[in-house]
Length: 477
Image (cartoon, rainbow, N blue to C red; front, side, top):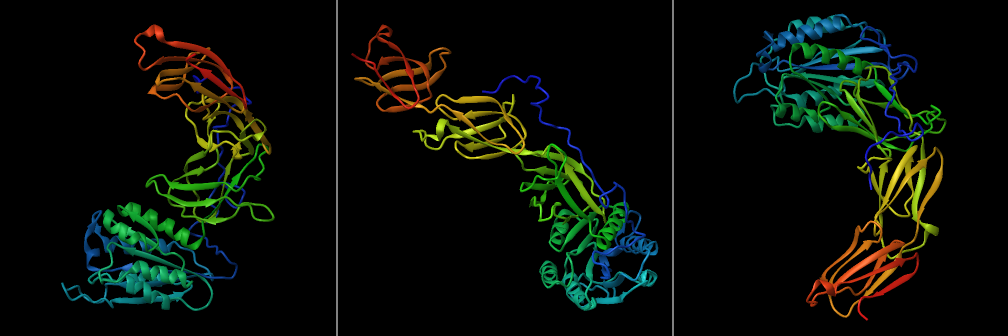
């Protein structure tokens, strides 16, 4: 039974002040790499970024005071102009919808062209090419992605596609299937897709292509473009350290989820791993959303509004994650007549449980103090159970006994706790025959036969139930 909230002792308090450490390179929370600097995942392996640019007729629509094509070419050109290139960064530009004027019912689905092949130090060449583009045709996204596979050199490298579009596939092909094929064959990594002022249905159709980012206005487009380029050039990595009471990252094997705080989507979701040699796994993650991190320990831990630094290694440290084990069981682990019996777990003093298990099942818990409510008859709560780091303990309760009520006729009866008069068993004009499992204790039964003509015919008897024994109560004779 839960109790009114009261102050807990320092030993009993479960820490609610979680500290978050975002480390760049394991040392500081700053951006170690910006757009002006380039690093690759593998030393000596080039990073290749192919821009697949939408120049279809819909890009002539006004967006924030200018036509979409003007805004997109200007912002992409400015970003490329400020980009510092080196021998390990190669850029390319493929454009679709620019070669054939759109005529209703006569779409040119082959209107896609590699305008600037891959090369180093060609950002200004791409800028010049963008200035000559005129938006006029259709939207063959799938075919452009398919041909992009031939745009990348065969030499090893990290191949990335950045698709910039304001519309969906217009040639009855499946860009999502093409994207999956390119990724499965190892031709490219998962593409980045930047949508320009799309409605929800259009955005949903592009989400399956890759990492989709919706730019609602030109200002958002500029911001998203910069972040996407950072992510494309530099892998954003993260590791989650689960710290024990001493501050060491030794805890593991707990599931955890990153939840996009804006959309509510729970992704990615992993089980924490400590590889041989120590140190949590390094994982790749989209740095753009704000995340809520939930560690699915017992009880759970949640860190809200985590902002990851793009292009660098982020370390998230969660404190007070030391764990121990408890096994709730009957004394000496005896078998009982209950069958499967549930246990509700509560943080000490809290009414709402955070987990349900079964008697006899070993449970891994964060260090702290807990109350356990056993689904016995009557229910039994064990309070103030301390869980220490590394312990493997047991919580035992007395084994039940049995009650047999004998009556010559059916009737109305209630079995109560002898001290509190709390009802334990109730019989409503039914046969009392049979055996009833009860915890050890003192009880009272009050009974009136169904055909008895007055209240004074009621029968009351006190009795005691002991562990492992049977108590028989005769209500007549």
